[in-house]
Image (cartoon, rainbow, N blue to C red; front, side, top):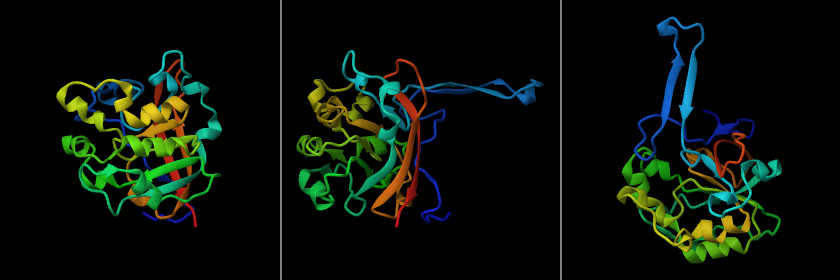
Length: 229
């Protein structure tokens, strides 16, 4: 597949049945094989599964919902934070690692992480979640100083996310460092993008489009990018 600047590339994790982490139901209510007039698929999926967008109400009672996020937030030019050459199992992403890959430009409001983590493990494997790199408390605080609008992550960015493997999530919220430092400030999150090996430039144009759901704290999201030269 071409990855030139005229090609839109899909970084979305497809919603599917039989995922190792999430319970979903993608099923046919109308089926040509059953002599139905129309093929019709019904979808049941958590709003925070697969590639999705977080709103503040995900972590704060009374916070804004998905439909309250300005459209301009998730459309436009994104700066790429490329850590793909250094990513290893359980890598702690520190402020020093971020600074080494940071373009010091106050105009940058939107960033996308490129770790290519799904090249290390399938996103439908326990290892993808159990061995993931993660943002440290200090690195999340560093990002919070940058006055960002939106961050897209291609790895499970908070260490406690792996807690689902043992049946629970750690408390308090401060352990979920990006949510604590960034989402609480109104920085929109797009989580669990994939295929970032297709990113070949330091900036990309992106469309990160959530489904319009009333009163929702999250929404499945389609993520499309174009490389820029």
